Length: 173
Image (cartoon, rainbow, N blue to C red; front, side, top):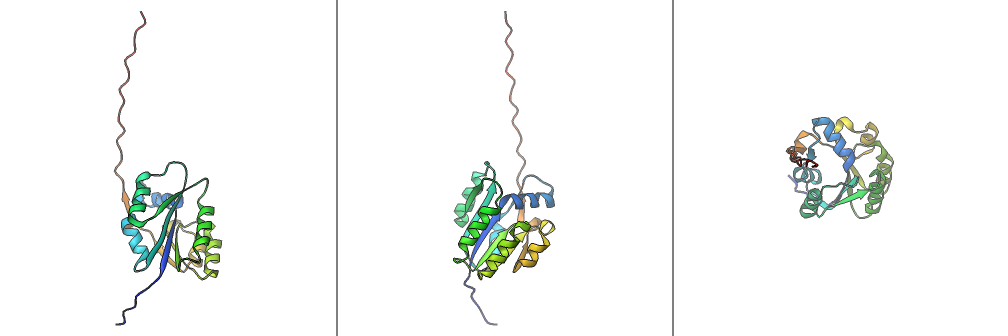
């Protein structure tokens, strides 16, 4: 058997809102999250991770997620004004000359043109998403598909809301 060392650099770009909606569809739990500790090594395999960026629309982004991505993968969380589509596409185009492969974590058909562009630039484009919610056209255009399955998730324990004691009413004398 010939032992071949793969020397590729990979960027992982996550459309957080798309992936979050997709995983909630398969487990029917609002508190389901990607388990990056098992998923990223599986996606990257024996290649080098160049970048990991989690794009997410909205003001509330978990500081724990940001800290975990930074400490484990030197990754970052990028808040987006509206959809992640444009910021993710711009970053992917900027990285095209710096990496061998880009893994887009989204099943959104809005990325079809981006995939075509990146491939024309010589970048291998892989999609990681929940198969049931992934665009068939996106799958056709990608070089490889990584299905995200229940084993790639974990369920956060539901937080119990603390009851606040009502302040006693004072009687007016």
